[in-house]
Figure (cartoon, helix red, strand yellow):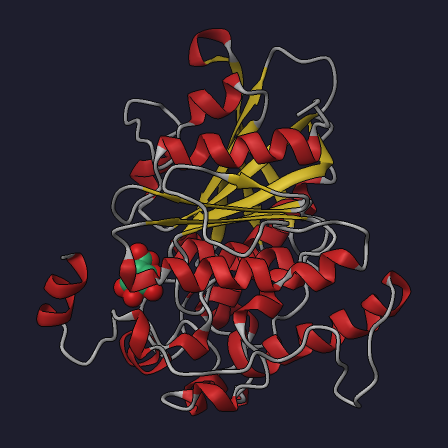
Amino acid sequence: ELVETLSSKQPGVNYREERVPNYVLPDILSCADGRAVHSAADWPARRQEILELFREHVYGRSPAAPAGMRFETVEIDPKAMNGAATLKRINIHFSEQADAPVLRLVMFVPNQRTAPAPAFLLICNRGVENIDYTRKIKSDFWPAERIVERGYVAAAFFNGDIDPDKHDGFVNGIHGLLERPEARTPSSWGTLAAWAWGAARVMDYWVTDPDVDDTRCVVTGHSRGGKTALWAGAEDTRFAMAVSNESGCGGAALSRRCYGETLSIINKAMPHWFCSRFHDYNGREEALPLDQHLLVALMAPRAVYISSADQDLWADPRGEFLAAQAATPAYALFARKGLGNDGAMPDLNTPLLGDGVAYHVREGSHTYSLYDWDCHMDMADRELKLKPS
Ligand code: GTR
C-alpha cells in the first residue's frame, strides 16, 4: 500500500523490489591489483585502498586539523539534570579570525561513575534546539537524560557550526576558512565530509578530557547525519563504534539498487554534500568502483549499527540491511561474525545485535526515536562496556 502511494506520488522513483536491477557488488577482499585478502594482517592495506576510493569518488578529501585549533571551556555545571550529570560546554576554535566557524560541543557527563565514561556523539542535523543544553527543550532526537542514565556521556554538536547545509560554492563555513574555492578539485571535500571532520575534532578534544574514555566513543547521526557518522567512523578509527540511523542514499544503502533516493536525485538536490566526482555516477551506479557495503566494512573490526524504519522507503531499508550484511567478510578476517544471520532481513522491531555489526528495522517513519537510541545503546553496552549479553 505504501509502495503504491509513494510510487504514484513520485513517478520515476523505484519502490518495487522486482524492479531493482541485477548488480554485482565489488568484492571486499579483492585488491585493485587482483591480490586476495586472506588475513587480518592483509586488511590495513586493503582498508587504505577502500578509504581512498571513498575519498576520491564519494565524500572527497579532507584536510588535517588546523595548527591553531584550541579548546575553550565555556561552562561547567556539575549539577545539571538535577544532579545526574555535569554539563560541559566546550567551544572548538579553528582560527583566531573573528568570523571563523566555532564548533559548540555540548556534553552531559554522568556523575554516577567511578572511571572515565564512554560517550555517544550526535552529529545533529536538526537545528540547535534539538541539542538544547538548558534542557528546556527535550526531544527523542537527542534523549540526553536517557543516555546519561545508561552511563554514557551525551554529547552533540550542530552540523551548521562547521558548514552550512546549502550549496554556497564552498565559500562559507570550514571550507571558506581552510581552502580557496579556486583550488578545489573533483575530489575536494564536500559538506558531509566537513561535518565528519567536525566529529574528528571532537575526538581530538576528547583525548584531552579525563572525563571521557576515548577508547569507547560512538559517533551517531540520523539521515544526512547518519551518512556523516559512517564517514566519520571510516575516516577516524579512534571512534570505537559508528551508528547510522536511516542514512539511506550515500550512507548505508547500496547505490546499485537504485531503490528510493538515487545518486541523480541526491546530487541534484544536495550538490554540496558529496565531492563533485560522485556526480559522474548519476544514473551509472554500476560504474562506481565501490558500493556502500565497503563503507560499512571500513568499520571492521570495530562496531557498527545500521538502523532503518519500515515507512522510510526513500532510504531503502533493504539496501541498508544488505550493505550491513555484505560487510561480513571484513569482520570474518578478525574472527568476528558480523551480522551473522541466515541471510533474511530481521522482523520488524527485532534488533539483530550481531558480532561487530547490528541492524534493525522498526515500525514507523523517518526520525531518530527513543527506540532507536535504546537499541544503539544496547549494542554499545555489549561491544564497548563488555557487559555479559
Ligand atoms: C533528504 C535527503 C535524504 C536524507 C534526508 C534527511 O532531503 O534526500 O538523503 O538525508 O534529507 O537528512 O533527513
